[in-house]
Every structure is written in structure tokens, then in C-alpha cells.
Length: 458
Image (cartoon, rainbow, N blue to C red; front, side, top):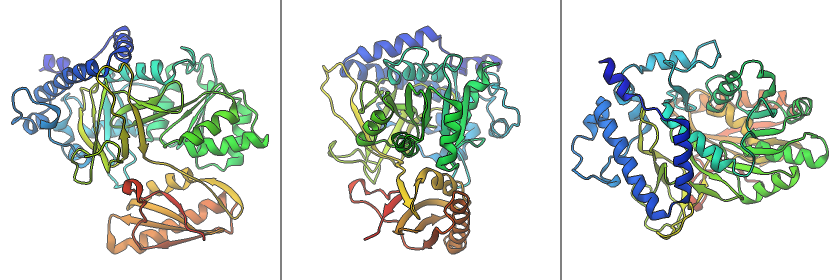
């Protein structure tokens, strides 16, 4: 049995990971597709051998199966069958939960070999993602060679540069867990990194950053926009050399605005807890799909491939070809995307566009806010499945939401309203009015998605 456990553990030499990422970028599209097919078969065959659940799910696959023969995977399915889904029998959900909730933040790996993150869990059931060494080294090289291209090999080394992250700085958040892991990785250099909670008001964030003097900043796009405005006003004075957007869609216009305000490169990365580093900027504001290690299938509302590649999808199927301990294979996510079609002989990565989570800047009672703060509160509020803020007056926001229990919708919304009123009062906006509506979320025509924030003032 022990031999089987060792066999299930997938590792990779750091130099080999660096070589594969470098070589993949130089291949033609056709060559990458051939390599992608080989990697898909290696992953699926491993899953069939080591995962009891996936072995059963894939037992009727034809010989010489293709990507489209594989059934779709849903988040609820992975969560419900967790212990049988993973490929390492040592990985148990109860132990994973205990590891995430542990009080000690010493950087110790789960089972001394895996990293663990989890999704936000707006339904009350977060998905815990275990990541193996094979996945971590390859995705680490994608960041190092592609995202950080042209920024120097040690730009994210906190022993040499001060790093600040303006994020949801609470235990269990994937971005905060990554921050803590890096902070604990080199004892004695913990003070070279600073996490600033996105729920702080902008004056406090600016004061902390001015005091810390970071050279690298990472954070949500809407917060970075606020910081760029503070930089233009002369309130923010920091020696920043690079800025990294995290977790939000960053438009070309906003990308260039932040870059011009700070006079340094802005790096933009589309990643997720389940699928890893999917697309990223390299030499400009366009994000490029890492198609040699991640498969993205744009699908319509019925989860079928989009008929026209020029149209926005209603969702995507994600396959991470690198994670062997908790395989992500044709995993459904409701992001709306476009993936550029390129010729077989083109030796470049395709442009990737997304209408994903995109927070907004807005003013309430004459004071600027990023919706990242109220998003963080609302996503974690019990019973909220999906939500939207509409600004109906200069001093009033209205929240709409889909709730887990429709019978208690008004009670849930009233409780959320009270939380939001407290938030704005604590952030110097005591006259802010928060109301709620039980009407459906308002959708935009393009992509059919419901924006988190909409300005309905006439």
C-alpha cells in the first residue's frame, strides 16, 4: 500500500519545470496541441488508476479517447466525493480542513508535501484544493518566465525587495494563504512583507503603504485604481518597481492608467484556486493563454462549445494538466471569455479575454470606494449565493441577491444591509444609505452576466 501512495505522489525537478515552460513558449500552436493531448492522457490515466471516484466516472471511455469524450466536472461533485476523488489515499477532507484552520502559520506543507488553498465558499461549502509538487513547480515557472518576463529573476524575492499585498487578509483566503506561505518561507525576513486588508479605508491603506515603502505591490484591480488616483493626487509616495493585479479583471484602459500613474510595469494574471495560472500578461496589457499547461473550452449556456469563437462564452471548462493529486478535468466555471483562434504554424500564445470578476470604483456621499471591500463582506455573508450592488442615488446603494433559502431572502438581505451600513460608517461615510431589493439581478447584454456593481442614477 505504501508503494501505491508513493507512486500517486507526482513530483518534478525545478530545472525540468523551467525547461518545459521555456520550450512550450517557443513551440507552434500545432506542436503545443500535440503536447497538450499527451499531457491530457497522462493526467486522465493517472486519475483512473489512483482515484476511486474518477476510475468509476471514466470507466466507459473509449480507447484513444479525446478531450470531448471526458464528462464535465462540477464543483459540488468534487466536494461531495472528496475523499474518493483525490488520488492520494492519505488526503482526507477532515485533515485538509484542520490544516487550513490550524493556528500555527509556520509554512509547513500539508502531509509535508502538499499546499492547500480553498475557494470562497459563498454557499457555505468551500472547495479545498490540494496541489502537488509537480503542479507547483510548473505553475511557479509560468509566473517566473511569462508573467514576470522582463522584470528580473529576483523581483518577487522578499529578501531583496519589500512586498506589499492589498488583499482580503483573513485566514483561509487563497491570496492571503499564499502571502503567508511566502512570508514564512525565509525566517528572519518576515518584516519585508506587508499584508493590508482590503476592508481598510483608502486613507489607512495609503498611510500603511507610505510607512512601509514597498517596491512591489499586488492587489485587486479596483484597489490598484484607487491607489493610482492617490498617486496622482500626491498622497502616495512609494518607490514601487512593479505592480501585480490579482483576482479581478483589469481592462486595457485601467491597466494603462495604473501603469502611467506609477511609471512601472503592471502585471495581470487570470488564475483561480482550482485551475491555477490560466492566462497572464507578458509584454503589454493583453493576457495570453498558457495553452500548453491549461485547457480552456469556451461553452454556451448548455455547456456546449460556443458556435462562434468571436462571441463571449457563457462559461468555461477548465483542465489543469499539471495537478495529479486533485485532478481538475473539464471543470465548469461560469466566467465569460473569448480565446483567440490562431494558425497552426504560429509560434505564440493566443490572446485571452475575460468578463470575470470586475470590481468598480464608485463614490458614496462624496467619498471614493472600491467595491472590493463590500464584495469581500458580501461573499462571506451566510446564505448569499450571488449578489449585485446598484447605485440609485449619490448617497444610496441597493443590494440584490440570490439566497440559499428563498423563504428567508428578506431576512438575509436585511442582515447584510446592517453589515454594510456598519462598514460604511466605519469608513467615514455615516450618511450612506443601504437598501435592498428582492428583484432579480440585472444582466448586461454582452456576455449575459450580472455585474457586481451598476450605476442606475439617471
